Image (cartoon, rainbow, N blue to C red; front, side, top):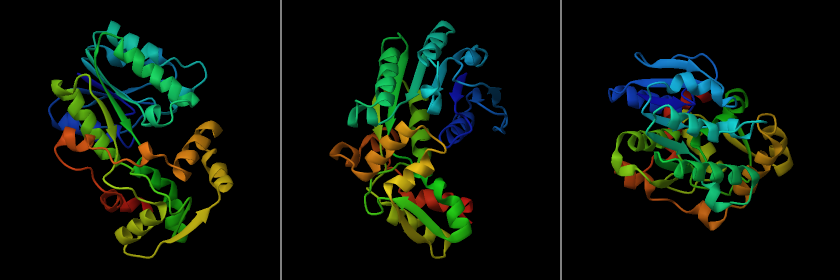
Length: 279
């Protein structure tokens, strides 16, 4: 059995589906009750309280570990999850980390994530580590303004990074969970090209078949909006990358191609598949 944490999110949902379609027994873990594919077991657990995942790990042989904001919760110790997995008989863990551990290693959140990577390496388990950059699905932040005002509002309109489709992250995660060849692999995951927010707005307009205006926010305006849903430190970190990406953050990685045997999907594909969110 394979346990997928964050199973109802932009990565976990397609990963759970892919594993189930491959004929594997899957336990989907999420913070709230949610629909899952037929035949998939669902467990509600909050990873900010690692003891809550223990029942989900019973009988599991592999774990996809996606921590999201739980890594930063007060009192959280996500290393306990790796220890519980090892004690419970899990043999393989695929960890969703972040490209920031190598591109901007001094930030608090990246130091914590790099420490978790090291814990996994030293655990005695089989492991693989995924380090994605920015997500195409972050464009869903604009869905309401596109639906109501036909506007994408974002900072740094002409500064781009090679954002990745979460479905490609899920596909790489599935390969790492199912294929022994990826044991010990560390994969940097990006999209196929650098794309700016202005060009993302154009891709959304094309998918909709109707105009979408781009409105450039100041950094302060963007931070005020972002801190409604994330810690201020994380908002500043994100804005630093979006506003002034360094060469490592602009690099298009070959790792999706290496693992999947195909190029990563461009943002336009993501926009076309998710156009209903913007209607």
